Amino acid sequence: MRGRLASVIWSQNFMIDSYLLLAQKTVEEYVKTGQVISLPRDLPKEMLTKKAGVFISIHQKDGSLRGCIGTFLPTQDNLAHEIVRNAIESATADPRFSAILAQELPDLVYSVDILSEPEPAEKKDLNPKKYGLIVTTADGRRGLLLPDLEGVETIEQQISVCRQKAGIAETEPVSFLRFRVERHAEK
Image 1 (cartoon, rainbow, N blue to C red):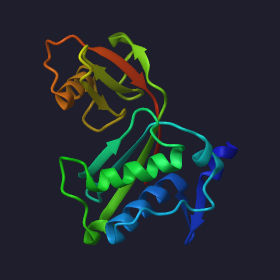
Image 2 (image 1 turned 45 degrees about the horizontal axis):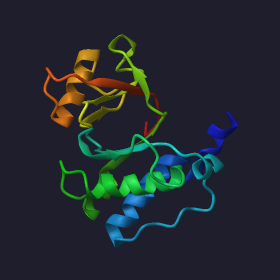
Image 3 (image 1 turned 45 degrees about the vertical axis):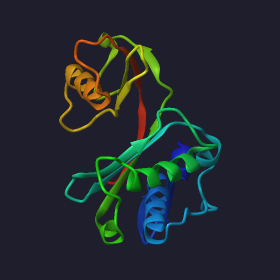
Image 4 (image 1 turned 135 degrees about the vertical axis):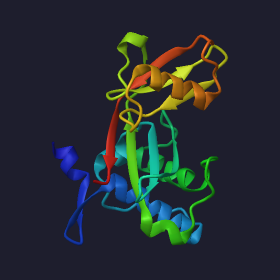
């Protein structure tokens, strides 16, 4: 419980999650100035010591996706650096969208998903509400879907979306990795 309390800070009489605040401030600074922010000094210890894959999702206030990029395994020294890197990528390099513009910033909503280490799974062990999914072919093509997403209710839907994202035909053999997320999202 202590670690979770440490990841929340107070700002203007509202509780703001440190993970979300770091993602938001990173995007705002990068979009406005092209500069990568320095890490704040008051980050919770776990953000500076823990390593994990991280996905940053950026939505417009109406709920439509504006960018989502992440890593399923850690690529940086710690969670804070992973969040900074993936927030910038989500805002500027998601191939489905143009880069976010400064005038859009006030209307954006963020979520930060911290991924557990993926583990091999059989189809019977999957659950789209509880686990994210990585579908992989023998030649290394891979599709990933976070858990508990609107419109993805069944295991078959989850597998199908993963296949589509990676260009994997429905008939191609695949293996499954599942993972959990610690989701930090604006309410």
